[in-house]
Image (cartoon, rainbow, N blue to C red; front, side):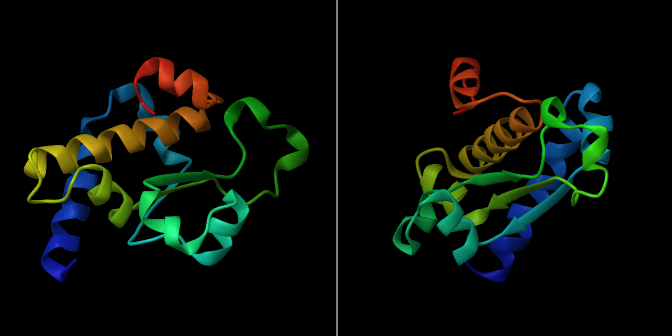
Length: 133
């Protein structure tokens, strides 16, 4: 992936964040959205994944979901949503895939909604039922 593709990817992320329903705005104010090419070794290890599987991961929610928060966790680091360019592009079959940029955009949106779902306390089964898996 070249610098121009990274920049375009990041532009699409910013666009998709503004297109989310308004009810997500307060939630987004509490989160850090981090866009990276690939997950780091520690993230992969925490997920039980190998470095060879890194290009399969589109996103990751880290932190405490709203449903699991308590007053005792005030000092917990802020929740983060990581979006991984390589995984999203792999899943969307790349910029030149059959769906082109619209496919990349769709995968970014699905990944954002998936990870926001985790912030709201939804598990993988819930997200699959909603079409965000």
